[in-house]
Length: 155
Image 1 (spheres, rainbow, N blue to C red):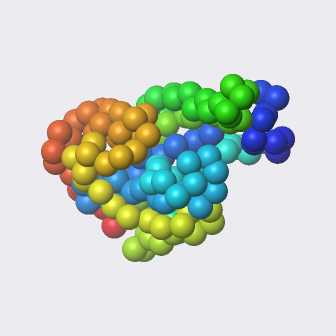
Image 2 (tube, rainbow, N blue to C red):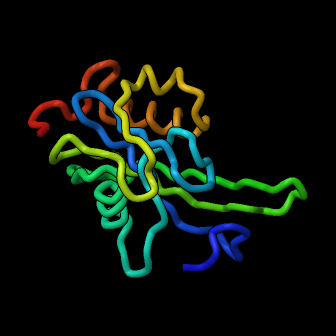
Image 3 (cartoon, rainbow, N blue to C red):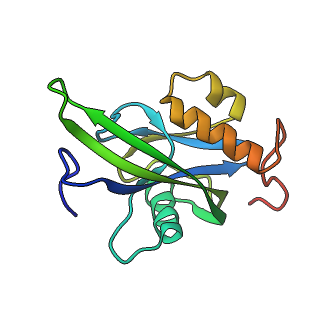
């Protein structure tokens, strides 16, 4: 893959709103951009990989869990400039939502920590505004309001 910092073109990334028992998984980022901040699991799509394959791989790599009932629901632009105004990072993020299945889950790969939050907790956290927005939108799309998205039949 080409350079992520100061890229020649946007990089396609995948963000996953991963649900378990009415809560959303957030990972503390171990690498830039937004290193040390809470974020949705996700990462760059690889050549030859579909969006949903990339989402499943990223969930496995960052949480040790499997992704079920995945669907694409939004697209977000992440563009960060350096002090001189040059584009340091440019990601086109395809947002996917689905259920976590498998064990308890744990932070892995470039995720430093994994935790689960209600949509209301996410809305009140000091996160990137797009992270808060897409979690809210995923909850609305699932028709959850304040109930548990996909709670029935979760492992």
